[in-house]
Length: 69
Length: 460
Image 1 (cartoon, chains in turn green, yellow):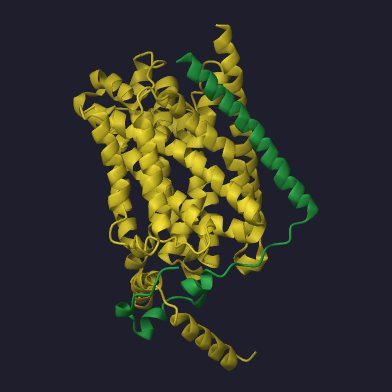
Image 2 (cartoon, each protein chain N blue to C red):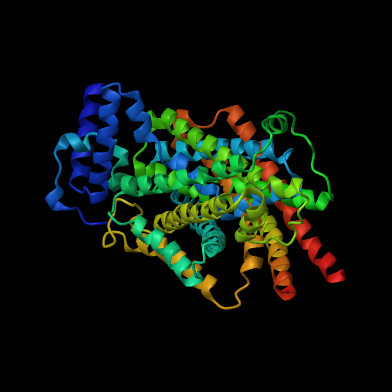
């Protein structure tokens, strides 16, 4: 987190324009983690596996195109 | 809790937070004060103007070098017809997705990477950010290639072109103020419409343009594989992972709140309309190559299209096409670099991630913003680097990595713990799910066709 700029200490009215949870001190506090169901976890990992498989096809076609040039 | 004690609690919380005010808060508060004043005084036009930004930037940023070349290839290969309205439909899909990211940012005041990291855990946060960094680096290489070939049309050398591209990213962040960075980006982004001028110079028949838009005809001729490649390439040109990270983070950096969501939609819609106009114009601009039966199968660079168009639309039109490519690459560089910096800054605990912070206040954010552009530039300068192969695979990689990003977006925007009443409606979910399925199918088909094409190439 950056240091405040003391010379810029604002009038309170200016900061009133921001919502309380917009302030960096508030928004930098992490939100609580969401509890994922087993089905959601399986779904996410299945999608990740699928994407890796398709990415492997892309990498293969990229490597083949390198040989062609 | 009574309204009085609740008000006292908020005031106490605000006082406590004010003790830890940062320069980022102060700069954002100054920008917000103008918005609040315009809203209070009923100056609607000023309010719309002040709240334009992330939506326009993300949509015109997506009309980048490779995207414009995809549209140009569609026009040169198939002429007016199916792909003209198809571009509008892909951007309509992009609007639906981007509206969700804007809403997430305005409600949670957190970036996309930050939300994945906090709500789903470190593994998914780092995987999402890792995907983004890889695809963004590849995309930035293609943007610099577009700038290089555009400048090459005017005789500017590669090192100078690369230096200009990286310097644009570095200079745009000077001033440590989001609003300044945003307005610099928007000024540059409007030059995307230079393709409209080139399209007019191509003298298309207005009736044929209107007929194509209304009837989706004539349908493309040729092989199914070639059609599928162009189709998926156009999908990849309109919906990419960096857009999600960028617009949500930029909406947070701008200071959007729940009250601004309607204007955020207007911002995204204006960006969508401008992007459709520019994208369709790039397609129309190259249709003379189709009507004159010019073989464009060997045109694989932007300067190639500009050179091929020169005898058909004149030197000024060709020069404008090359200028448009330079602009498309430059504006996309700003957005893609920024989205990387936002994402990395958000998942590295304690690091600042805002253009309202100076280099000394957020060194990681600024280092990533400029550093990834510089690395892309250095790769372009490597003698013999496989730039053509990288260019041809950039949209493909973006399309393939898009489904996980869309799924996380849909889950987040339906998370009532963080979104409350702003969570997705059933019809937003229906449209969002259909788009996710379509992008997944198009990306997968694109990858499989490219994979099978390697065997055909080997056989021949």
